[in-house]
Image (cartoon, rainbow, N blue to C red; front, side, top):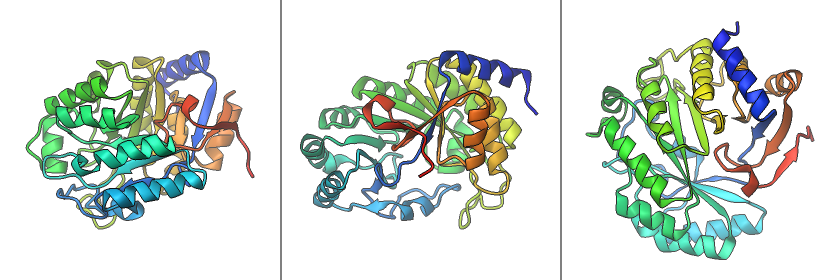
Length: 309
């Protein structure tokens, strides 16, 4: 079922930009962890699970060598990630010189999961050459306490968003739908925060009940709820690139979730199903392939027309 709100949102998307980007970060845009599988937090939706799938770079020298090898093998960029410290940010302090060297000697596009970095560190990340901050934006105090367990507020996230905007060329807010134990709670407040910086891109994620976490038995939001919120975001950000990110359920409801996003005016999707790609064509969209994370400006990476080979 498609609501009137979704019809309006898709119509807006079709008039503004009738393209749909299927995004594939692997192998040209890998994710690196500067903390390995270590994290000072014990977030209820993650519990370090996703760190195990990243390339570990536990020292600045290893980070530089890894990036050098990736660039020589055709990579166009990297996402710097890892576990947060107990203040809720990625501890980049010892990596600034290595990042600057990577940027200078490889020219790779560098994205970073920053977290709530202090102002001075945001400035230094910009100076070192970070191109884009993928910033998890939370709009509810209770959600922060429940899920992350840190002494921070939604206003702290709002302030960090503005600091990053002043310090880096690009900032892409990431909003997880259903983060509050499957409940939609602070997402609309987060959309309001994001609107304050007029981002080039907005990435929407969906809570994934993950084995080995406290949320493994949580029922996440329905595809219809996700579609409705995406439609609201589309209408609120008519010119921003709107993406459905990699963090979303891939269970039996995967295709319906993707189709709801598609019908709500989404511009990009990370690793969409074949059914979604075909549906995009039937809706009159031109399907393009982007070999990068879904938040990366397409003009900065290689984009090609879709090919099944």
